[in-house]
Length: 65
Image (cartoon, rainbow, N blue to C red; front, side):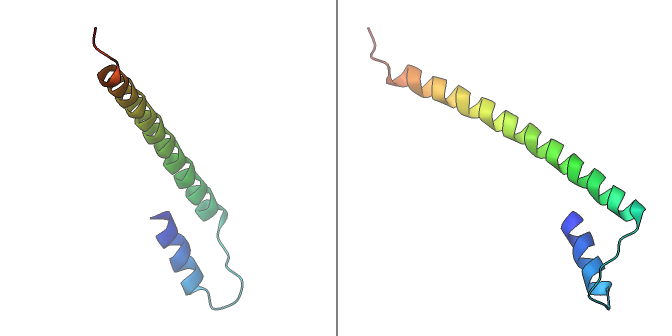
């Protein structure tokens, strides 16, 4: 959605300059920060899943006594 907003602004511009209002810039930054937070949360969960899988694989590979 952020990319779509930026593309529509640049396509609507008839000059070489693309101008954004302060409110538009603030909204885009807010959305980017939200997206970054979501991505970091997903990354953290994926790291946890990978760690769990590593532990499971290690337990399966260990020689049974």
